[in-house]
Image 1 (cartoon, rainbow, N blue to C red):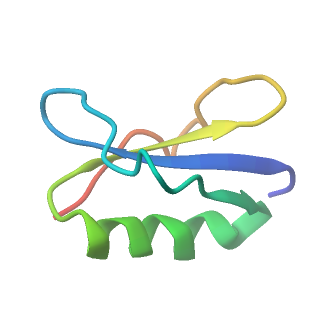
Image 2 (tube, rainbow, N blue to C red):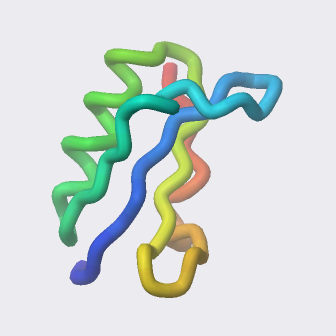
Length: 66
């Protein structure tokens, strides 16, 4: 996995939860970022988007935190 990705957390109403914290990660660091977001925002939905294309990362996004 390569490239740069935005990682954002949303609540069930679609509201962005990490408004004041932009998270940009490279490659496989998406997993650590996703887990960190789930710790900070339990039960949120994590969206991982490619910075260049704006498209969600297939197979990894959206992700429902437990």
